[in-house]
Length: 466
Ligand code: P70
Image (tube, rainbow, N blue to C red; front, side, top):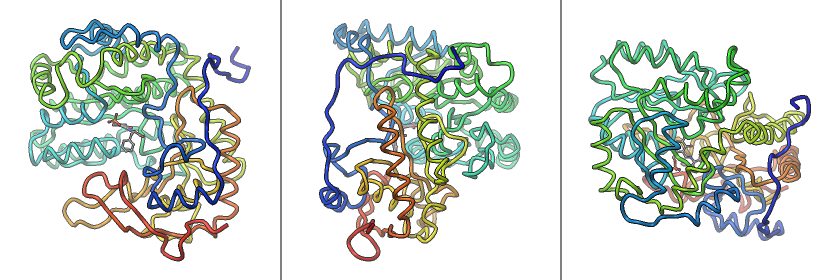
């Protein structure tokens, strides 16, 4: 079986029509959107690779599950199905649903961070860091150096750097550390996994110092897949076994179920500690909803419970990551600069290498995602300086080592032919890269600026003049 190419372990039952646009229409649409792909109307997008979040195609079983929604305000049967699935596959004791991942991050940050505390993490994620800061915490990056190098082929670029973590503990003392925020399949590094050996060691270090570890489990199953393929000793374990082992080292997790769990909306907070669970259940009623629905409909929780079971099936993950690799390989063959190794949820273009003529102050990744949309209607997402935002203290723009454009692949949605068209478009923009111009802000909001910022080209009216 495994000497054959991967193919989707499903067939298509319903189709959603896409609208094709002309280049002139796209020029107008991106200008109206302030050259920010978040502000495009989805009707104007052909292949939508903005995100893998909430964009999955649900299975017929999940759709059937929607019809079993128990919309009771309290004690919905679907909550208990979700709770059982999380306990079985992730292994945490207490499960508190939230409307999506950031709802869980909000509750956890409020409960576990005191003002002035540090929160080490294996690379920042935008919403996670924002909630940590709103709670008075300070994020400290403790990911391995390889994560910041797009050309490093290290197989576990998501790993925690134990020296960096140890040094922080020594410098500030355990009482100043809120917890370790441990992300699996690190998003901002390019969808890069942690090894189980590293997870074990990082969590052991924390335990020795009495520091808790909370896991951002958003893409933990994708991480489990890479462990199975790459880490000695795991080839014969199931994804479900590896997932349980990952989670067993940590004290709880936040989850955006809109990714691995194959649903369009939902999330949860899970913890093992009884007192913390009580406090979280109490706080969730203030911000999300009663602790047996957390801002979701009963049907959403049912779809999530079913999605969790489907997500750990090996053939599903093999096809999912196989598709991402297919796109990545096509771009590598054309020598387009991408982050290596190819990640789990998308292919990340290295905009600094792609557009060396655009200075970082003119946001090359933002320009590149706008140019790609103009070329073909493919929508990508900036993951560089605009996403990183400003320094809390100085107010200056921060320029992370990685200035990337993410081509994020929704699960079970697009075909290999869509990947071909995407690759052809990226390659054609690459061939005409000298015709892409930089951008400057015309509007910059206070919180998570990348979502709503507006820009204009630094010269002329068009971002891509090819
Ligand atoms: C994405 C989405 C969400 C996310 C995540 C990790 C590792 C938490 C969350 C929050 C959506 C997104 C969010 C902010 C900026 C751009 C896009 N990631 N942890 O596309 O979960 O969205 O459910 O509140 O990746 O990567 P939620």
